Image (cartoon, rainbow, N blue to C red; front, side, top):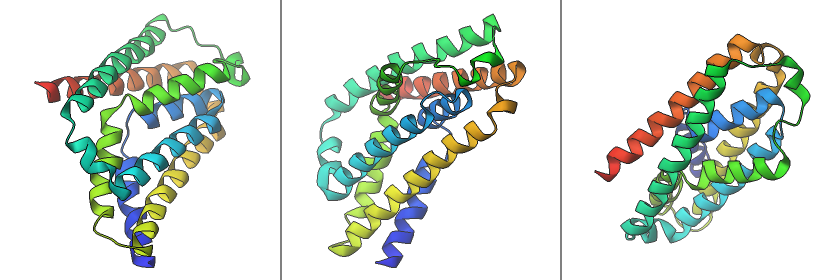
Length: 203
């Protein structure tokens, strides 16, 4: 069981840590101290549910329904393109104020909706959690399968909470106008690159 847990932790980390839409959004919310732990919690909850679904059999269901995956992909392209455009617009306007550091830049409801969109409209999340982690998890049985799933979910918990905490901790530096502009440009580029890769995958 320990081996399965460690394998889940390492494989889960390798899937989660590379910069992506979820990480970029949590980083941005952490810098603004705007419901950043709520954002991380939603990402963890969604990942946990999707990982569990994949490990316990839903991976094959998604793999056998290309139409469903295509619908999710188009939704992701539209959302990521729009979010990237907003980030580039902020960078172009260059109207950053450090006074916003502790302000409610977005309401709790807006943060919840945006986090769910970043997570659930990103087909990469389903491929990583349900398909890839699910296929590996299906190689285990009994308690070892539970241990593997637990390890992958632990990786999600450690990474997302760590990212949210670190972004908020160093927000005084990260919230400087020039740094914030650079982050907006980086976030916009990441969102558009992911949207572009999703569009190419439909060709």
